[in-house]
Image (tube, rainbow, N blue to C red; front, top):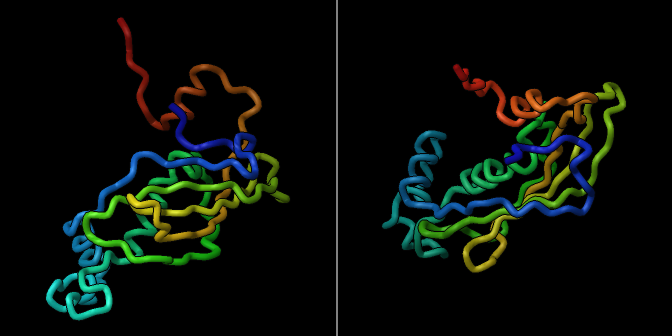
Length: 171
């Protein structure tokens, strides 16, 4: 199983459907709010939220973004040298407790590094949608990824796919 991609493996226009999705629970949302000190009652207080235009708690947007970012790692940034930039981030529709979020990323552009010939920059757009196919979040980011090493033997490929994983010692 591959974890991330080398620069050469990205193709402009390719779309990666991230798997699996994640059903957002009330616990997930509340824990994220409390850890990040976002104590807005729209996210934490169901009685308060009943009086808002949504009529119920809304999942905090940064959790939705973080969830989608995490979902995309195996396909997009698993080999990243650096996450360079989040160019845009839009929360299109609200997410509620019990919604299941799915994500997919499309490669918009890729450029070789002008300063180091062993890497390049890939630009992707990630969209997140709920169980009904309603788009809830869209963001664009740039990631610096390595080029494939010139000589990659079987042992090197194994450890490159799973960094720091020990090799079993056979007797």
